[in-house]
Image 1: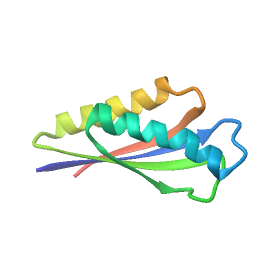
Image 2 (image 1 turned 90 degrees about the vertical axis):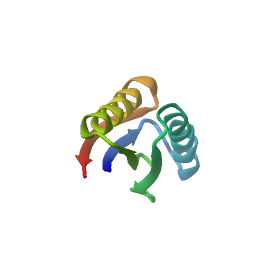
Image 3 (image 1 turned 180 degrees about the horizontal axis):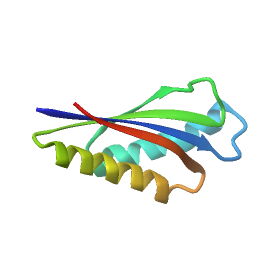
Image 4 (image 1 turned 30 degrees about the vertical axis):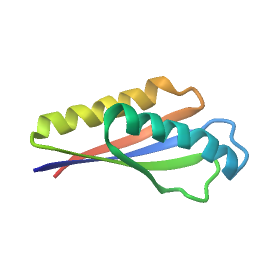
Length: 94
């Protein structure tokens, strides 16, 4: 069993409240969860209005497959959402 874990740091452009942050992050997390069949949650920067840290995990039987899934998730986040800017990410294969 191979576990892939990814930490994604985001900046939420032009946000002024925690409600606005939720409005930007929740649909993004739902689309990632549904499209890639991964577990995703907000794991950091909970009180920051213009920043979010997401944790993403997948389980596979092949390390290359897990890395591919997480790389595709990162590319999706980077390209699909204009109100969220990808600052940094880290992928770990366990």
